Image 1 (tube, helix red, strand yellow):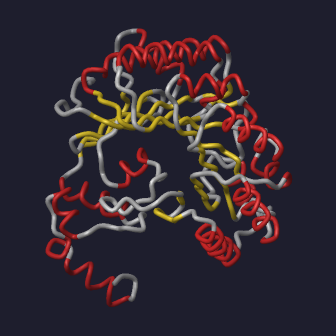
Image 2 (image 1 turned 180 degrees about the vertical axis):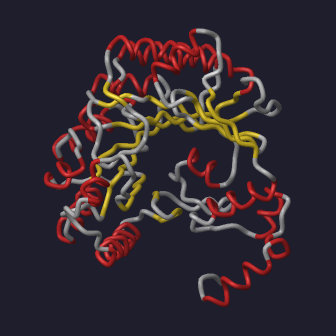
Amino acid sequence: MPEGLPHGGLVESLYLHVPFCARKCSYCAFYSEVASPGLVDRYLSAALRELEQQVPRLRPRTVYFGGGTPTLLREHHWEQLFDSFLAWFPEAPAEWTVECNPATLSLDKARLLRAGGVNRISLGAQSFDPGVLARLGRLHTREDVFRAFDQLRQAGFDNVGLDLMFAVPGQDLASWRDTVQQALALECEHLSSYEVTYEEDTPLYEQLQAGAFRVDEDLACQMYRELQEALESHGLRQYEVANFARGPLDPSTGLPARACRHNVNYWRGGSFLGLGPSASSFHHAVRWKNVANTESYCTLIEQGRSPVESRDELTPLARAGEIAAFGLRMVIGWRFDEFQRTTGFDLRTDWRNELEELQRLGWAT
């Protein structure tokens, strides 16, 4: 790892950030940019070089390619990735997820992903309402979602998740109910659903600030409640604030079989390594982040320099607080004894006053 970053112990969760999009969505604050052929080739070479440097410290059990739009990569890019991955990691990861925009998938690409070892897809549907898709700045249509889902099934994927967004400006309850029903009709294995958030430096935020619409919190709450009820009645168990999955509960973890293992590792305070521009990592109480600029990232890697732009070493108590917060996003929460094994802290002692105050206010039990 770069100088000043922690050594020791194998990291089992790997994230690769693919920073390219055909067009920036109006709600998105993640680092991404419009792709150009030369920059994509240069980025991939740099990312593989960064990955190669980390091979001795990695035993990837979960892999997640996010973005951006990973499926903008062309077939020869994926072949290069898979060849390198197989050479460095002969043991296939238990879960390998790729985020997919419905407008950028073909049957050939779906088959290539499956043959390369990818076994889970997160399909960014967001909505089945043309007006909502337009408001979000999405390139795909509702028909693209159905086509892409069918192609994934044809390619042999039996673990496909859908992403949906609710409380979008202009979205009413009837539109949301229709989107949920169309998503359920596809019988996906996983569903993530997020209330739209207004991040600075996004078009939606600017529209909100300009008074183009107002936020209806009561409507957002009703949409969320109806989502929970509809999914539960169709066999999708909620296991986290925004995530639902099929399958029997694992008695050792309390999670449904199709829960996203990679994300669960984040929420349970595990180590992870992030590669690519803007990607974050965490290992041995140290968090670090790569530079959020593709050109700069490539130049640093090409010069044999570290792409890390920031580093933060957390105190044990600060890290315990983060782990508590992330774990409380999950339905299973934290058992006191499990939390103590993970962090070394017993919240009943270390945060007794805070816990008592939360109970007094009726915010916790």
